[in-house]
Length: 183
Image 1 (tube, helix red, strand yellow):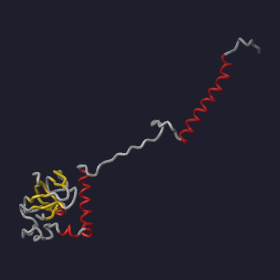
Image 2 (cartoon, helix red, strand yellow; image 1 turned 180 degrees about the vertical axis):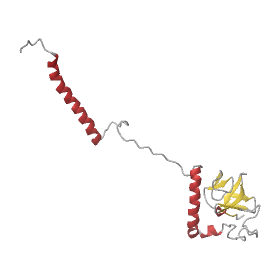
Image 3 (cartoon, one colour; image 1 turned 90 degrees about the horizontal axis):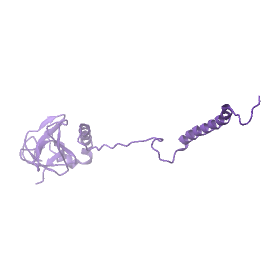
Image 4 (cartoon, helix red, strand yellow; image 1 turned 90 degrees about the vertical axis):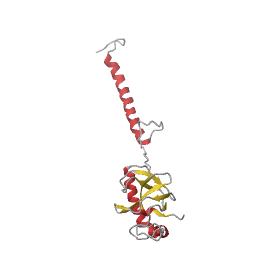
């Protein structure tokens, strides 16, 4: 079959165009595949892996931090006698019977109206004598407090004292963080 050059059929154009389109498509797929191995310098966040870092402060007054603080209290209890024996000896509690350290002469350790100081940082002043109660204030080392009741409460294996801060906030503090004031 013979035909004139001005009489081309559309299939003639397809025989030329399809191999070129297929080659371009193959090169594009290869480029995409190779760039995933080599990396991309365009800093396009849509092609790479993204990592997000979330920081949560430990001192945030949440229920989780309160439970963590209770665990830290136990850890301090087991380590503190070997590291700081003078600090622990100065902290009177109802179970040790160290009544002469506060100068009151009672078996409870502190009397109503006694001045005490906090002997550690980030000590929680709580609304009730429990680690699950609300935090009224976070006390720092050296904060001065006044004992409101000469009878401590025992809860969750801790001895709690009812105290008032110099700002007037009232609450409960664990006895191991209190010591008699030098004044």
